[in-house]
Image (cartoon, rainbow, N blue to C red; front, side, top):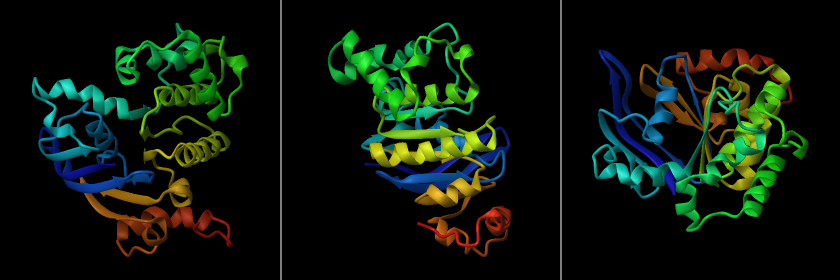
Length: 264
């Protein structure tokens, strides 16, 4: 059970975005992908769920080779990969015309979910799952009847996460999940990502600029620059790196941590 990239290349016109990227994320791990803007972090996530086709190389999600699913025959398998993956975007991307309840329940009413469980979920089942996932993101049922525009941006983020969790994905993909949040809300969302990953025993890949969070909760940190992996290692090794760009990237964050801070 893993996500694996093998010599993946991707260019947009003359610009190389991914240049021979190879890595593996094992079941239950939390991987942070860090790097400057425009270095291929979000593009990496989009390749996992088959939104983008690599120019060359292979991408595996469990037993499925996503990179082979861009033919007429292969496209039939792509929904099976996407069922395994839950994507949390930069912005909540909730449907304003639906209540928070119906936003969370959205993925439970799709043909893909019916295929996954082999039947139509009952109204009571949907209600139970929605409330269970709401509890996991530390929200209370009183917000379910409200619409996204009637709750704060931070609550919308959590509703979005509950929606992602509802169909039961095995992989959680976060694309800049704390964008637009104040420092306190950012910290709580980061703690929630860690809690969900460990409690649900899912594999999480987080694209972020939040170095402090990466140092605190990541099992592995992958550092991308100019489409190449500069380093992939546990946080305790990354901060000792002599690679100039990696060292510079973490210097300010390390100076802000308390003197007695230690890696788990």
